[in-house]
Image 1 (cartoon, rainbow, N blue to C red):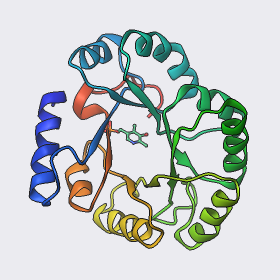
Image 2: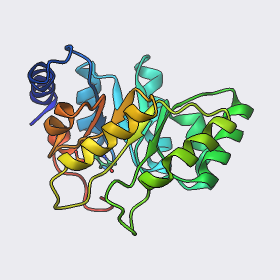
Image 3: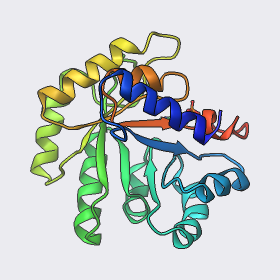
Image 4: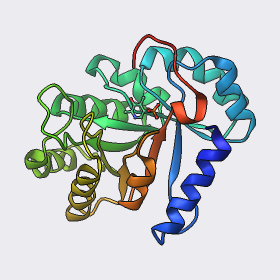
Length: 219
Ligand SMILES: *Cc1c(COP(=O)(O)O)cnc(C)c1O
């Protein structure tokens, strides 16, 4: 547990997969964490953080990023279209581009604000009806629409179904990204980031294994 331990495990997983040291970006997921824990990880010099809720991120990150230049904040939670403006203002990357209406809103906001957060398209690799994300079959059409809107996603993101072996989902996401020439793969959380790295993850999203258990509300 803790930042140093997770960083060590990431370096070991990179090495085991024959990947260059530092090729995986650790997104420290700070949603619903007490401020003093986040302050500790900032003080340790970590620079990439993840949040799930626009309002929570708006309340805490502007002061922290002002105090720690070079810190970037990634949106990894579901994004309502009416929060697109705030999200483009606030975040350096958005991992949850998951539908046409959101693509249109983000494109309009990026043009208006002249800001260009990195984008990842969320893929519903388990075809789960309740889960957000583009179905694998619909990905080519969705990426074509992104291109029409002048959006250039950096990569793909997935959250494998609860209680399933994540490896086949990581493999599917990797193959889809390769087929579409996308370099980024946002996959792997506290329980499975080493497996994700073995399957090519470029961004792992790790919360509780760094910070400890979250406050009970939310997820
Ligand atoms: C909360 C969250 C994480 C981090 O989860 P942990 O199990 O605490 O590492 C990663 N990705 C997404 C999309 C999340 O919502």
